[in-house]
Image 1 (tube, helix red, strand yellow):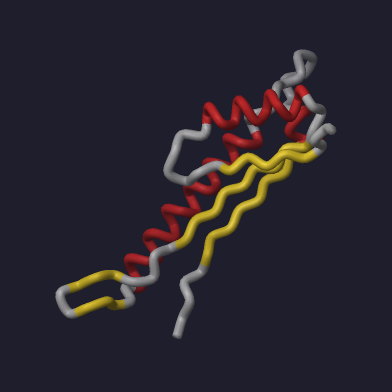
Image 2 (cartoon, one colour):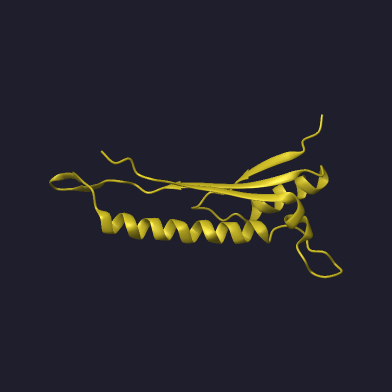
Amino acid sequence: MSYKTMVVNLAVDANPAAILNLATELAQRFDAHLIGLAAADVPPLVATGEGMVHEGKVMQIQRLEIEKRLAELRELFELSGPRSAANGDNTYAARRALWAWQLVQPISS
């Protein structure tokens, strides 16, 4: 049995180098497509002395930080494939890789 599509989960709070290297190597070895996946959510509530409150400004800052990290992970994923010796292009990633991400929205009441 062979696998033609593999998914690699890139955690937003971890260094992806080792898992990207392994996933790229395995995808090449089995001539498989590689899907990079990352997901995160913005905590919707902040605890205060008066209870749980919605803090819009804090949520906006957290969302921007997460979006920045997701963009960094995408760039690392897209650059993780082997480069062609002839022209330096990342031909493997261009042909065989797909990036997917999700930033979960808080549920409003």
